[in-house]
Length: 416
Picture (tube, rainbow, N blue to C red):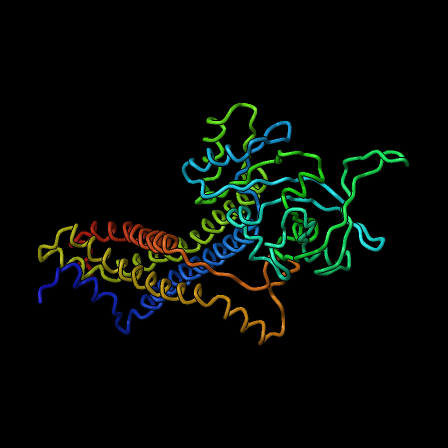
């Protein structure tokens, strides 16, 4: 079978003889270094993707992606506005809400709380509150039932459970024979929710029916805002900007980036910096090929001179050593690809095994959002990493190959 002469000789040079086994050892070290760098880079980026995904899914399961409100805090005729905004591109659903501060009291224990009045059917289309219920039913929030759903942390602080009574005090005042008194109403706990990794909601949020909230906070038929759900979390800023340009100037549009944007920018920057640092590790391993190939060139001076006398061109000589270096880079990248994918797909199992062997907890939910090591393998990251490793390997071969092409046969064979 026909083989290009440069590829044939380059493949032959990768199999070291006994007298130049040290060069072969350096080539093997370079290959393993590339493999280790690629595997670590794939694994670390997959773990960071996993953390990013888990935090995003937990943090935004009940957060406001896009909110439409007015500067005076009262949004009238929200049904018409809801139909209008639902026609906007990337808007999946909308739901009204009444949001106000309050104080829950039970048996002398009080706790501040953010009250949100919702319509259960509409709310299920824009948030995952119903799926986070540990006890009770979301449909229990019917008008004039004065039922309330609270977080697990708040329930523990008040020492209450489903079916117990609590008193909600509001900042609104009402006149009485005893003077001006805060408005209060007794509610029955009909559900308890828990959002993993979101202590703010678990300890300081409560949900009641929208009509009960309007009556309690004296809002008539108005609501505080419309909550929108978009098709993709990262198009929320564009959706907010489009609505701001469409709706009248007295409407105020906000999105999740105004509250959590700095946090996710920090995660993105951290991922970028780790990527650059680990790429430098891969670069160090690939540029070990430079010293390896330089020694090969010096060792093969006589062979190069003989090939030149047989008519080999400088380009052919360059191709020989480029092939040799490319083989080392390709095999190292391939081994790193296989190892990185296996580690990324089994990162949680590996960490759990190490925790069992060492009897030590590496990841705790008290410090992180989760108590396990998540991993989310993205093929775009894999292709980028492998491409960078291969390109760096090829770049590392250029100088030694160019040096080999400049070999003068007469000088190389003078002392042979």
